Length: 259
Image (cartoon, rainbow, N blue to C red; front, side, top):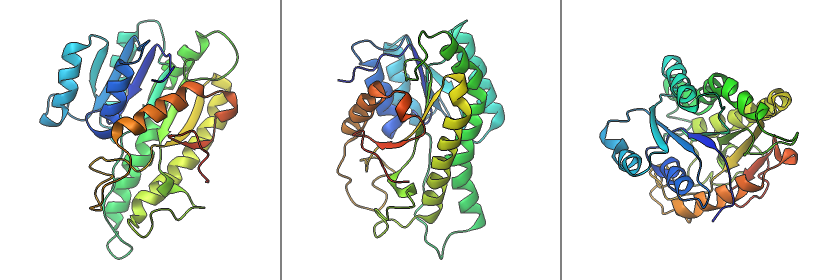
């Protein structure tokens, strides 16, 4: 199990797949966070049932209504998290919410490109803007000058599909809109690492691998990684991050993914 030690963390898109897996394993850490905030569109809906069951067993888990494409929802979520945290800040923001559609060059439209880009890239930007004050507060309240997830960090869930260098998976899933949105997310991560370093916030793009989720299985094939395997690896990576890693693109095993 990971040696990650962090006081507070927020995971977006936390009602299923990798997001739900992250919440489960964070709660099960030897030294679990004091607060785990799980963001999802409809906390009281059927899709959030597993999350609500977890929350009933773990007082440290707070389910937060969060639609990453809605500025008002983001603002309200940040206010609720800030209220729960009191005078302390948020140590770790994991931008996991994302979407993909099985489109091709021929079937891509203005609407599909806009929807995917808004969710996967712009939503992340807006979320980071809203939670930056809490991240800065956490960084200011942490001893030492180095960067780490225990201090303050933004982890953007990316994909090797967003790598311009690697054509990995093209034959299976061309998904142009998804790939473009993740390439843009990678650049956003790099920009954040440059802009937020002075605030003591580490920023990283993370590839979870090809995982057995609804999204990962959309092409009709069984991905090689289970959610548990991917999440276990990612938490181990997060526990080891330091100043040298900010602005990089790593996978669930800690290996560098080419831009």
